[in-house]
Length: 120
Image (cartoon, rainbow, N blue to C red; front, side, top):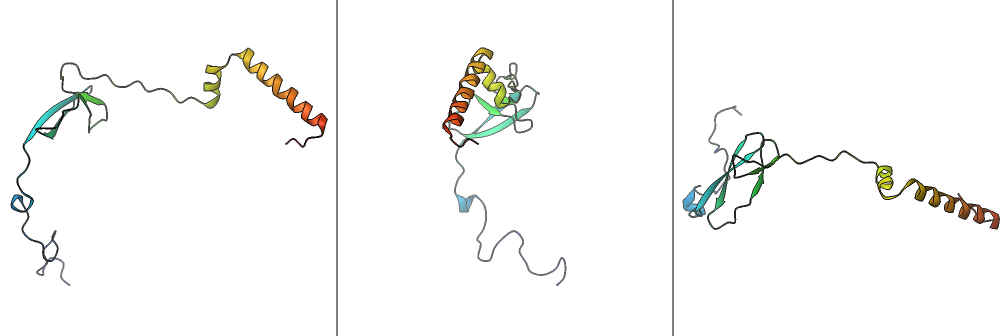
């Protein structure tokens, strides 16, 4: 088989008809909205005329939130650092509460061992 020759129609399938608006119908009326992010990226988004326009849109280039106000784009979101399970527990409990809970657990464990319960 030759690399470039032949009667193949590329990008189509056998029996496919003509492509274009005649086949798909008329396009719905549209409007374009420009969104601006904190990195001065402009994103032109097309919506149907009857669609409700969102106040913000994620910038396709950097992912930051963008708005239609070019003078005051939304600030980048604050990224919370990763917290360990222990950090969350320490937020909920004081050191004294932790000591009380530990003492109670140790007393319960020792009582079970005295009764002969198998404790792993």
